[in-house]
Amino acid sequence: MQLRYKPFELLLKYPFSISGFTRTSTPLMLLEIECEGQIGYGEASMVPYHGESVATATAFLSKVKLDWLKLPFDFDELIAYLDELAPGNPNIKAAIDIALHDLQEKLEGKPCYTYFGSDPEQMPATSITIGMDTPEVILQKVKDAELAKILKVKLGGEADKLLIETIRSVSNKPLFVDANQGWKDRIQASEMIHWLHEQDVVLIEQPMDKNNWDDNAWVSEQSPIPILGDESIQRLADVEKAKGVYQGINIKLMKSAGMYEAYQMIQRARELDLKILIGCMSETSCATLAGAALAPLCDWADLDGPFLTKNNPFPNPDFKDGKWVLADRSGLGLA
Ligand code: MG
Image (cartoon, rainbow, N blue to C red):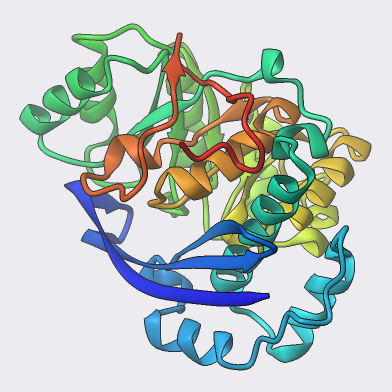
């Protein structure tokens, strides 16, 4: 089994601002794992605030040996092995996991979504994100997102109501809201949530600081719409903590260390009666298709990487009626 990798700078269409950060590109590590004439593709999207980089990913990959793996791959054993090599590093672990799922299903001649029991007919519409910006740029972004049936809006700044009113002046599409921990006072947060409910907002992610479980729980309890933990919920062990605090969780492959553990998180969230949004970082078609393979098992999808970036090295997957189309191709389905 041959492992190859190269850094890639994924350029954003617009400087991306969320509560507290602005950036214009995202460093990636693109992976290829080759075995028996097939190549599995994987990707680590290393947003700076997660703490991973080309240097940390390269250091991690230099320790990885995969020759012990036998088909069908034991992903439970794989994740235990990767966690043993070093704690943390979920982005580069996700890249390995995604590449091995793509490879295994190519060798099996089946799509990844069938491996997880996903029904392409159950694919939820994916939102396209409108980052914080001036009203003029917001209007342009809404126009750019015309293919989307749902818009996702980043709040938690100084001008939250203005931003929503700007969008509502030109669009009545349902909205997902992501506060990215930006609200600091639970009473104000709760008032804002009730106002957003009147603006046809479907769900709200991470209203307050990820470590402030009490205030997030209080805000959730008051809320007429589902409140989801995102930054609070990283890997499988965190799903338990969401119960009684949030009505749902945002699962991302770059947090969960890949598809295998994201699938475990989906199963556990269902047992705990939690709603599920499957989200993403700035990603190419590769990680987007990995998320899309699991999306039919979730309530909502926010897999907009290819819409927000401008040098995706892979062809965009098919997108129809606001949804990713899962192709009848083996592996992830990268064209
Ligand atoms: Mg979020």
